[in-house]
Image (cartoon, rainbow, N blue to C red; front, side, top):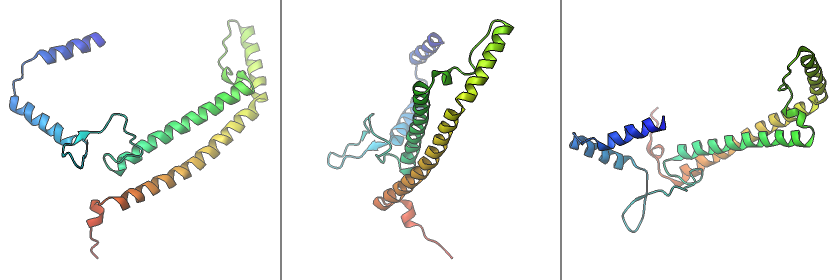
Length: 172
């Protein structure tokens, strides 16, 4: 698939330009749509560096910052729950990682595996309940903290910048 994609790409590069005006118009439109970092003194705007932190830097409005903060919160949430489960599994019993995943070649082995799995599952049920309780409380507290942070960000950015909302009128 990669070879086919490369062949197609190089064939497109080798084709002659048949609509020079359309190409120029498209390139100009792309240049106007680029988000550029404004430079105060030199007068030439440049693209933002690739390492720009979009959770803290207002590049394309508060919505972009909110979106990237949501992505970060989602990654932190998933990583925290995963690491907590793995720490419980390593610290208490590695059987938590293999329960329900053991195969058996004969009916007798299947019966033994099912019997062992049921006994082990009931023995480790308290770990699953503890993790689930932690996951619920962490998710609830994290959601409240996330909502407060997002609301503060919107208010702070709105107070620092002049936006279209500052020029609206309410007609009664």
